[in-house]
Image 1 (cartoon, rainbow, N blue to C red):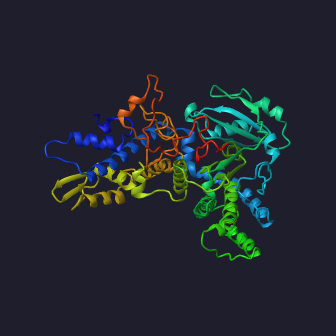
Image 2: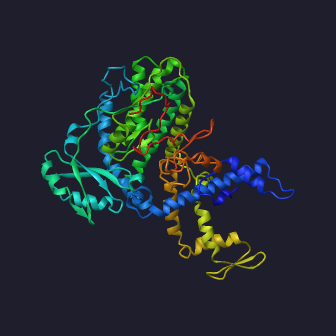
Length: 522
């Protein structure tokens, strides 16, 4: 058997166990607890290697830095937060006018094209927009904005995420003011070059039909509605706090979405003759739960371009419409609701993505996911400047001061010689790396030799599941044909990562629920 540490894919616990027990010599015996402890360490190291490989390959890319680098990310967050201010003010006016009093995220009856949710899209927004077919990773947002801004009437540039199946190219939209001559704008920009790359622009043609996505009918049960209400509240608090932090020095309204929604829902409940304090989650409370939840889901979509049932967050209206469509409804139950395995997997994946947004991992949990500990990074750098004189006596090589223990020297170097171990750079680089690891929708380096679908995001790119990874027994390689196509597939009963089913035709498709034929996610 091959040592798991020498393979470039993650093996199963069974393979790992068989390997170590086959290598045990003489009276040496590994208990189940010892094997499990070693396996957890192996998985953590494997994830760390994957993350490091991808990080190293893309840390200088513009799209990667603006998404994860502390300074670039802060600047980008400030820009996006400023764009949210008018959306917030508009939502507050609509809320106070009662526009969201009857909002519903339930699937409308067949043939009923009407919805109580206010339409957020402005038709004029679409007719004064040019579409950029492809943008190479070598050309950053700032240079492209400078290029597009030479055309009179330019308002903003919106870009998608980098696409790993297209060599990390992006596409985008250029928005102009309503009085702009779009034919002239198109002529000025189309086929122009930046660094010898020729850009192609088209008039943006919005879809004539609004896309609608449907979440599993399990989302309409009292238990799930209660859970989603609590999570949506936490999301609003988190996203609003980010905006308030980014705009702390700007003269703008403070985002208080949760407070405003609580005040409005209380007045609606009182008008219905109900107690705003609430009660137990049962069938009788379902309408109340939906009123509370759906107004929050509308807030998340309108202000933060966050689709709850996709677990997807976008930077622009254009990208949000592309990824999530006009609506993401809950499927209406047809009789008793049964939780299938695929639905269970979908809920687990969704809950994990949402939790990683509201409660980012730190400490030991972050390290388990493959992240880095700043203390350990600083210690490793400090050890290079420590000399052991004798047992119980250590010297700082930077100033010759003696200490009784190695730990005391490490602390001394960090406090007295921060430049020698580049504390500032270490803090920035560690935060840069950990921002990437914490992203529930991160890409990662593909592990070779894997069956399609057995690593998150199929070919290794996509969404990493820290709990499950992309595990494979080498014996399963026998199931592959000469061209790498899957043969018999995964053994019966083996659970797949709920986010493995993602297609590369649409990298940003939402997490899927029950995969039965009656489900329509598009």
